[in-house]
Length: 294
Ligand code: SF4
Image (cartoon, rainbow, N blue to C red; front, side):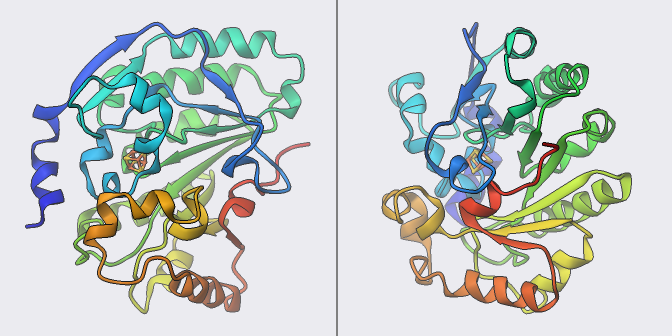
């Protein structure tokens, strides 16, 4: 058992949770990754600083732990995945900001770039669900992308389905479950199954192979079998916002047994999917390329 998996066992005991009343919940996006495509996001929505899933494998390369919000929000000695600062008034703020927005029909919102909207505490707090209920009351936005790694999103299929401009984004970085820095077999299978279920339910679904980790020969086929309408592939070097510098400082860089700076495996997956005529997109341009309703 590797260190990350040992760490995962203790996730609940180590998590420090604090609550705060925030002043704003929609963060304008003017530059950076979420604006890198033809259809840039105008706002992001993250109801927490920190992420409970940070104690899992993805915490080893998560760029959110290198951003100022986390450094100002955490207390001394708290590592990524050990603390969560929750904006408990997120749904009320969202209602206020949407009701006052002048150009709601232009709004394209990414939920959430620096935390996971379906991390375990969502089952207790239902902050994501309450935000979805707010979005459902405003039917004139351009796009809401709900981006998660957690199959717990299946709890909310009906809530997402009630928003005419919503897309579900599910991160599936690989189908391999024997990597010292990757998901378990159950995590892989449950995410693939969650995408299938969401598509069958009638949602618009995008798979984010982000970042693309080493995969098996049947990965492209398995992605296509889910029925997801779009697939976006991203790499450490292109997608970490610093040409690999952030990843180079992360715990993942010490664990990796391959050259993660080389985009070759991601390019090869992109080519395989293209040969199947799949709607496959690349990195930031792909994330910020979903057609909205405008
Ligand atoms: S789920 Fe996302 S935000 Fe949370 S630790 Fe993993 S990569 Fe970071």
